[in-house]
Length: 71
Image (cartoon, rainbow, N blue to C red; front, side, top):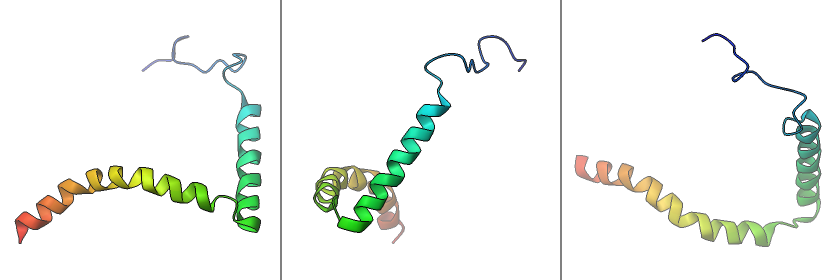
C-alpha cells in the first residue's frame, strides 16, 4: 500500500502528542508507586473484580462447554 496523505501520521496535529503519552506514562508510574506504598486501590480493585467477573464467566463459557462435551 503506497503512502498517501490519508494514511500518514501528521505530528503537527494537536491530537497526536508525544508529550501526552509521556505524561500518561509518568502518571501511571506514580499511581503504581503510591499503590505499592499504601495499598490505596484495594477497594477499587475489589469493586472492579465484581464488575468484571460476569464478563469473565461469559468469555470462558465456550471453552467450558467444549471441554464438557469432550468428556
